[in-house]
Each structure stands twice: as C-alpha cells, then as structure tokens.
Image (cartoon, rainbow, N blue to C red):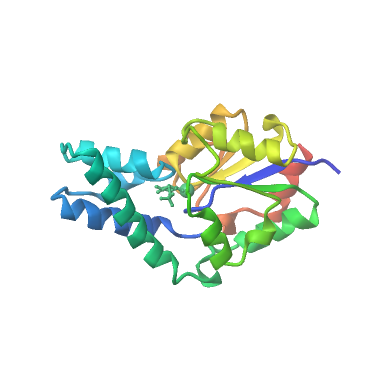
Length: 218
Ligand code: BG6
Ligand code: MG
C-alpha cells in the first residue's frame, strides 16, 4: 500500500481553540485600548505568539518596552491556559476522530504540525496524543508559519518526502506554509479565506473516507 504523510495543524483543525486565542487576545487588546476585530483575528490564525502581539500593537499604533512586551505575552498565555485547562474530548472538532481512524486503518503515518507551544498540553487534555506518530510544535521551530519549517520537520519525523505529504490547515499562513513546503494543502474553513489551498472543505464532515483513500493512492 502507498504511504503518504498526513500532517495536521492543531488549533482550528483538531480542536476549536481559535476561539480561546481570540478571547485572550481581545482581553489583552482591550487593556491596551486597542480595538481588535474578528477580521484581524483571522490574520493571527497560525501566527506565533510573538508575531501575534507585534501585529496587534502595530494595528493599534502602540510602541511598548521589551519588558512590557514580555509581560503581556505571559499574561496572554496564562489567560489562554486557563481556558484550555477545562478542555476535554468534547472539544475535538466533528469527524476528526473518524478521519484519524481511517488513516490509522490504512497504516498512514500521521504528524502534528502546529505553531503552538501548548500543543502537547492540548493533545493530552483531549486524549489524542497517541494518534500521532510525531508531534512538531512551536517549541521545535525557529521560523514560524508561513515559513514551511514546521511541516518539513513534521514530514522528516515520519520519513515521508514533502511532496508525498498532505497538510490540513485552517489558517492563511498555514496553507501558505504547506504550499511552500511543496505539499498538498487542504484548507479547513471558508473558500473565501483559504482559496490558495489545493482543496477546501468547511470541516471534516465534508471529507469522505473515499477522498482520503484517493489521496493515499494518487
Ligand atoms: C497557532 C494559533 O496554532 O498557534 C495561533 O493558530 C497561536 O493563534 C499560535 O498564536 C501560537 O500558540 P501558543 O499556544 O504557543 O500561544
Ligand atoms: Mg490553526
């Protein structure tokens, strides 16, 4: 049987943590008197913690000291951690377990490729750690998405060539990173936002087992 590498982003693909990132950033922006919209939040998906704060400050025309910057980064993460501490399996997005099980049944290697430094905590909370043959996250990279580094490492860890990998992503930066890695990109979300992906589905309920099998065979 053919072997392909299946690489999953975490936030917004496996679990709906995007809403918690948004709440935590919104709280922080409010404290700085910055108006932070959902459209702006869309541009932060897949973007590292440091880069996200830099972008919010730039949108609000604020310059702050390095000390305050570091303090705000910790505060944001504390707030975010308080949300994810409550997470359980019920927050796994619909049909993600089915797709993971289909891949497992077909002996396909599966990697995580996430920008988050909290990825392992979240996978633990939702009991999905054992579904992954490799976990690559924000602690393992020097260059954040849209740089392809995270996906290239994720492919290497499962011994699959980049051109034989398929990436599931919900963010603009992540789809760009997957394309730059020369992988097939599957956007999870709206076509209006993720039009640069090879395929786009609203969510995993639209991804049939037959489609997964066609990805393996082609
Ligand atoms: C990405 C999220 O997966 O991880 C971003 O889409 C987030 O919103 C980034 O900023 C970094 O996450 P963390 O958990 O390290 O702050
Ligand atoms: Mg994401």
